[in-house]
Image 1 (spheres, helix red, strand yellow):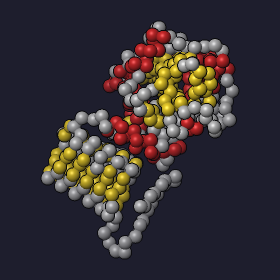
Image 2: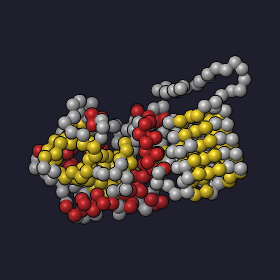
Image 3: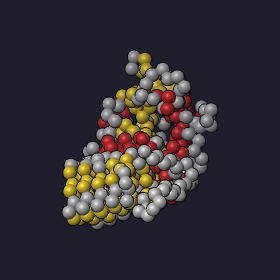
Image 4: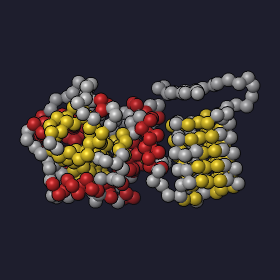
Amino acid sequence: MQDLKGLILSGGKGTRLRPITHTSAKQLVPVANKPVLFYGIEAMGQAGIEDVGIIIAPETGEEVKAAAGDGSRFGVKLTYLLQDEPLGLAHAVLTAQEFLSDSPFVMYLGDNLLQGGIADLVAAFRSSEPDALILLTQVPDPEHYGVAELNDGRVVQLVEKPLEPHTDLALVGVYMFTPAVYDAAKSITPSGRGELEITDAIQHMVDGGRRVEPHIVNGWWKDTGRLEDMLAANRLVLDTIDSRIEGELAESQVDGRVVIEPGARLERCAVRGPAVIGAGASLIDCYVGPYTAVGRGCTIENAEVEHSIMLEGAAVRNLAGRMESSLLGRNVTIGRDRRQPRAYRFMVGDNSEIGIL
């Protein structure tokens, strides 16, 4: 099999992560202080795929370009491909056809995380040379995903977000194709939601006698499109970190696997890992609990934070209780004024959610 190319999808509106995605691409929301998109690019490089196209949207494309650059720091060459409208994954494949040419390729959804990368899967694709290889994993809520039905280890049917799923095998956001997928993508019609579904294209390949192989993923996989999935992915990645203390500790205690990046300063704080404290962060008289990622330049004072993600410049001050299971956007400030009377005061954007327990 000739050299593979890579295709990463970084379009889409990210409606399930609003209001964070009103101002930023969902693929750039960080997990363990690294944009989700970067994990996919790194996975391509680690699998030996050097030529990678990234599908971008008009609204967020420039931000994605500025963040990922030319790909050299990941060991790959990045080419940006504009998809004018989010008309489906199969439409994205057709958008990239000129770039991909006649090469087999790996398609990776840019808001997905897959444990262990894709090197072994790429090797399996190279050795068995099917027309397509799809990744599947068991999920408790298959109605939210594309679902596969197998018969004697062969793919017989794929259905996108079925109301009554016949199996619990969901399509993981990594696919491998030969150029045979282009004819399939051109042969299907838009679904009820107006998109060219990749599941329909793969089904067309199956019905046409093409060889579509399934591969069951045993490790974890996360689609980070929802808050609870972002927090779960953050937890899973933090579980893999090694301790590294490069910031300044003043009368502070660090337990477990904790990363404190350069320029961060902790005064009279306790941090229990796994956790990461970003460069230039300022923590004073606070507790940071497990599975927390504190971004660059964040501030925590007189507060407790656990199992949360704080993006760059966010601040939490003077909380009477613990903030947990939360995602704070860039430069968000949460705090309690010490003056009387005690009351809540909010300035909140569209599609936000506040929980007071």
